[in-house]
Length: 398
Image (cartoon, rainbow, N blue to C red; front, top):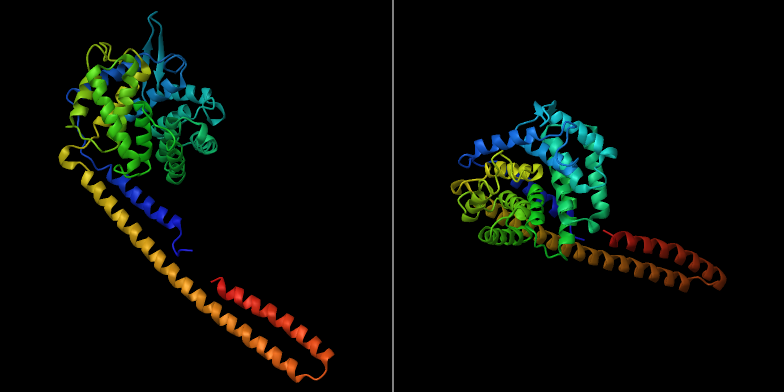
């Protein structure tokens, strides 16, 4: 058995992963031209279409969770506003009203047994700064249900569970689920940017190296697919997939604002009035508008070329391999020395046993009475054999 167990190597990987997560926060905040006006208009539209009951969409937990997440991410956390219906009636709207509706809908600390919806809601509440008992129990529900049923869950549902746990600060369990996600992805050939974008975000949220094989193949696939989608045109049907795929690219830290694919996607997403409507929404849809806002906010945190963290990540990855290589080499050397020590102890123990046997034979030869002789020999042999066996066992289990 090697001196350092595999979990030691895992701990070292996790330390380096923590470093990646921290380093990824140090980027230059930038803005797409006209971004502020676009965002503010979309925010006002989202506010105006909140239902008097507090939700968005058709009593949709997913739409409401994403709307809260988008608003909270953009700093709208405790505001109240007026909702004016076409009939002229007025109601008070606000984030807190949406939160109350969500909690009334998601009983038993989960949203109708749906991991994706529950994870989005938890992320939204965490973005609002809420870390109450409801969130705590929901996090536990997300983990327990995902770990138990991960083989039967959709990859992007597991991915959202990982992101929620990581945002909560539970990196240990998030990484445990990351290993489960890797396991189910082995036998799946993913060709859906909507799913892949979330998978990439989950991997990066737990500190996985953005240049690792797991992320690299998905980033390359999304880049190629999104290039093609720009050429063929983005429709209302493919808009959601495109935006989530873009967010995956951004979160991977593998692209920068000057990349041609990013520039083309920004132009397509902001295209007016085909996608972005005069009222400020995207397709007059709360979910699509919330996703577009999240993507625009993510764009605002992309590094420019001169501060791109590629060199940092490659350097960290190189030293990670060196550390693990040194530890494993040390393990092999230590294991070999222990085997040699064991072998020496075994020969010593066998020598002791041989000496004991010689003494017994000598006693046998010297004693005149066969009956007494047999009794003494059997007693001594039984006693010393047990002692010798124990000694051999004791020495060889070091």
